[in-house]
Length: 268
Image (cartoon, rainbow, N blue to C red; front, side):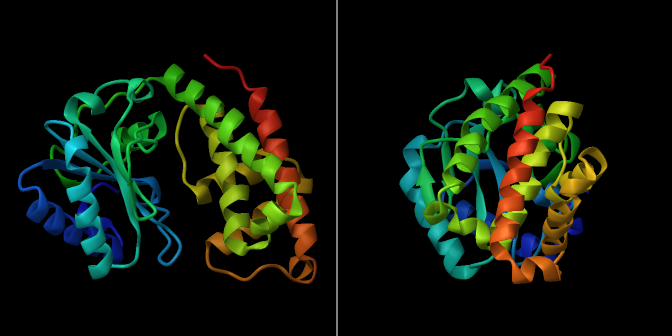
């Protein structure tokens, strides 16, 4: 992957429309546009995946957040799906350790935010190794560092993911894990972190599922295969169709197991 013509038609459409509205709102400000996430990792699923971006400017756009928000609203009116989420940063920030950055302008779930989670070592490595370039240099200077990457992934696992699992153990909050989309998101999402801690590389949700099948014991294969089947657009297996709470339990147990084993992996 790496060229705009290789992306799904819906991805190309929303990206082109985005450039139109942002250039109209802030002429000449967005100098680089790079797609990361599932698009870059050849795992975009129409109807399920969002489009993640890194937009690069010469100077920070923090003072233009309101104008950017209005541009994103116009884009959503023109192209409701897929959702386009990402972060705005400068060329210097793209070349710097993203864990040292603060106060970046981002767009997520229809809202402009003064935070830049998408400017992180995983997305930077994705851009460095799997560039999908809509505008700007084809090989931009982007920060990558193995130790920084693995420390960030471990911190994300110990905070966001561990806390998320704890919340799911209450049935009221954990009811979301009865949904097909949440099962796929959790069961395939957490092995992505394990994969990066073990290899220093990045992979997609589908790649993480295949890695999990090759890495974890057979007792976990049923829930992993369920998540992969759902990711690929198939139907849930019969045993889970009749027992949704059993699927929820298996998913939670597997996610907790992956977190525990990932913590045993050494950091550089």
